[in-house]
Length: 338
Ligand code: PEP
Ligand code: MN
Image (tube, rainbow, N blue to C red; front, side, top):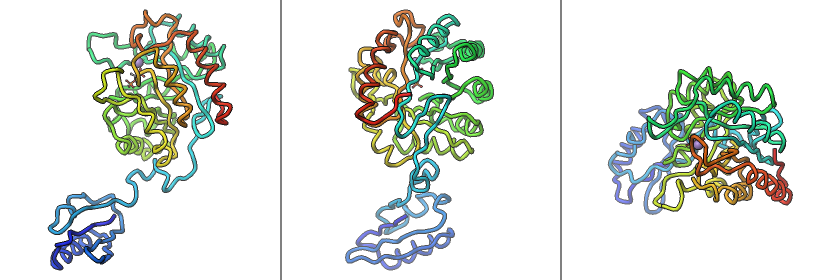
């Protein structure tokens, strides 16, 4: 960390800052410049509060040189993480497709979806058994019965299951049923839940909080990694902005900086990101084009009858056409669709 002193800082103020840094067990390295002095600080910076130094008289600014996300960042882990689940790979060189209805509605729907996906060579199926709904009166999901339905779909068709956990008490149950455990946007900063899934040995799909910065998102991933679970897939699902033409603003511009800062794979959810089914195919193709490692899509045989998120859900023929387009676009990009 660098502590930059004001031009007008007095020698006494500089001395006091140096003493404070040393008193909290860190090493201070004064770097006098022509107009002002900066102080390099080394040691275990995790333990200090920025106000301890930033608020001292004569201090203008603190500049962090290393990133706070030690496990999620590339500084100490250069190699890309690729998450393998059955035949799917999510990470550098691969683009995984995960699709299914928003909610587990009933067994026939889920079986039909699983068989349809398998017929197209898609091996990851999504659907929520536990649903985070804005209204307490809306369909809340089938809960544990939904998990059993998903398990039976896997047993019959071989699809792997991506499903959300919302509460710490359900982590073991969802972890036993799912192949990839989803943390939803509303829970990205639920630290108790992040700690619990850090103990699981299943990959975690961590959705970006709808008002979270890139750094906050990576710090949320850090909680899971610090618990010993090294398989985290980040999922951009749109953030809140002032726009009124879509449910959220799908921030594809986060992909290049994210890939530069982190080794973790990143997938895109254009369904929640746009909220409008007509906009899902172009934004899925854009996700592949901008370098993301996968897409998470809401599909349903009859989207207008879906029990949740029907407006952003595409039907089976649209999905089939999109898969063909993804496979074409992947060729010149040298990416494998899986
Ligand atoms: C979902 O995937 O159905 C979902 C609820 O997503 P999000 O947490 O992004 O709203
Ligand atoms: Mn949904």
